[in-house]
Amino acid sequence: MKIISATQSKSLDQETMKSEPITSIDLMERAGHLLYEKIYEKFGLDKTYIILCGNGNNGGDGLVIARKLYESDCKVLVFIDKDTTHKSPENLQNLKRLKNLNIKTFDFSELKEVSENHSNLVTIDALFGIGLNRPLEQPWAERISEINEIVGEKVAIDLPSGLMADDMMADSNKIFRSDITYTIGQPKLSFFLPETGNFIGNIEVIDIQQNQYYLEKLDSNYFYVDQFLVQKIYKPRKRFSHKGTYGHALIIAGSYGKIGASVLTTKVTLKAGAGLVTSYIPRCGYEIMQSSVPEAMCLTDKDENYISSFPNIENYKSIGIGPGLGTDAITKNAFYQWLKNSDFHNKSLVLDADALNLMSQDKSLLQYLSQNAILTPHPKEFERLVGSSKNSLDRLKLAQDFAHQNQMIIVLKDAVTVIISPDAKVYFNSTGNAALATGGSGDTLTGIITGLLSQGYSSIQACQLGVWLHGKSADLALTNESMESFIASQITDYLSTAFKSISK
Image 1 (spheres, rainbow, N blue to C red):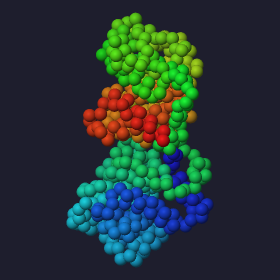
Image 2 (image 1 turned 180 degrees about the vertical axis):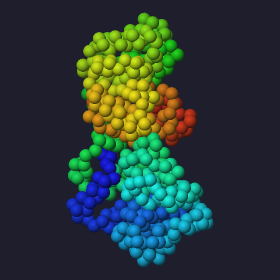
Image 3 (image 1 turned 135 degrees about the horizontal axis):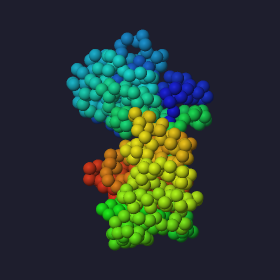
Image 4 (image 1 turned 60 degrees about the horizontal axis):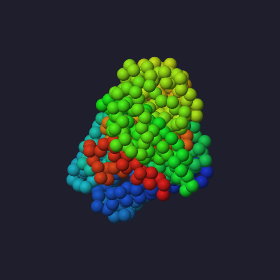
């Protein structure tokens, strides 16, 4: 799904109205009705709805929602600016429709008193939407703080007030804190940035049937990896196939005290569908690996505690390297020689953890990697390899430049994992939660991507599908697990269910 700017969103609405054709007021009615359906389905009849309606078309959407909820016998408390001077024509028309039903409206100055006299509240923010292009000023800055104090669930229409669609510049004390954001048409860039993403809550995209032909023509480097996309990528197994059909993956991982990293990575590589997996580890891990993952083949280094030499890669289709590897001098020297002397042509390569830390000590080694090699850093590993950044947008720009210059793929692990392709396209993942903030989580992602690569997925497809499955496994786990008790091996446990969710 393409992510477009606020300016592009407005032009898409204009083009939709022109091509259908449909009037602005009717398009607002369509959007408002779809939003109402989602809200009513989620919260139902027993809630009291506080609907905060601004002067523009976002406020107009809110007025449609209020009318529809009222017609469904819900209790609604509608707050508006009583001064009609600055209201859009569509807003005024929907306000008239509201008054024709004798629905009482309140001034924002009454919000605190009215809200304190009601319970079981859902507060709906329809104040600014994508129309906001600068930080909130008074009196709205103070009002937003007051709104956030209202007890109950909170819903944002399109995006929370105080946020801008394309920018992370915002004062956290002046932003509506939403539990769920129903966004119209496409998600917004600010949803996925650490500085602003905490205000969004869960995201649900509302399709209002915009002009798809025009949308395809709009230029954007930002995309959203959702279930619809990964279902198109996913390749079901063929009936007439064998283990060789799905490739042989090599995992190079582990050192004394960190054999668990190699176990996690190896096991999930198999669970991701690789036909064969070989694990290359120090000698100290042999018995652990054979008993923990009997389905995998195991090769050991001559050194007891560290990897001191690296295997020939001729017989492998994909290679995952780095989890638990360590940065001991003997491993470092062997790694450098292996990179310089190996032929990675037609090999799919995933580098993670200590493989990245070792490369950051000698960046000239980047030249030896295969085109479309995949690097999977967390923010600190990225900083060591690429450099520091002022903020998350600046970090994205650094990642785009790095991926393009080196013709590699960056999988930047964070609360929202981001994939940056060699052509500088940015893909934000739609799955995952804070349960993934646990040791070994990144190791399993390396294994999933490596396992998909062995089956013939392209590098970018393996990243998109792998990152989505990784997050989906954690989402599914929360049915039975708490975020606190979830551990990395459970990603492997729930991976099968994640696959099933896209194979229907």
